[in-house]
Length: 128
Image (cartoon, rainbow, N blue to C red):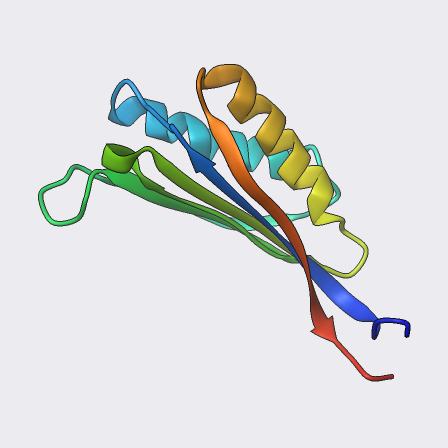
């Protein structure tokens, strides 16, 4: 049976051993997300970065790059070494391009980083 057609896809990336020297290193991930979008066919429309110092929330960060085609996000629990990234695009933009760019640069920059999940999920599935 042929799966129903989709109009979008979501790439989920989960990492362990995500260690950062300090809060400025978090910002590098956000800049990398924007770079990954810029090198793709996606169009950035807004971006926001929020570092957490551990006083109100666990140390780490949340970041989003809103794109015309949907979004790229990252959330990190730095004290636990956990980093979750997702790349969701619609239409003709392939989220694998953005996810692969991010993954390759993360693996180069963060020694010991381990990708424990990379999963593609079709979105906007239709019966027609």
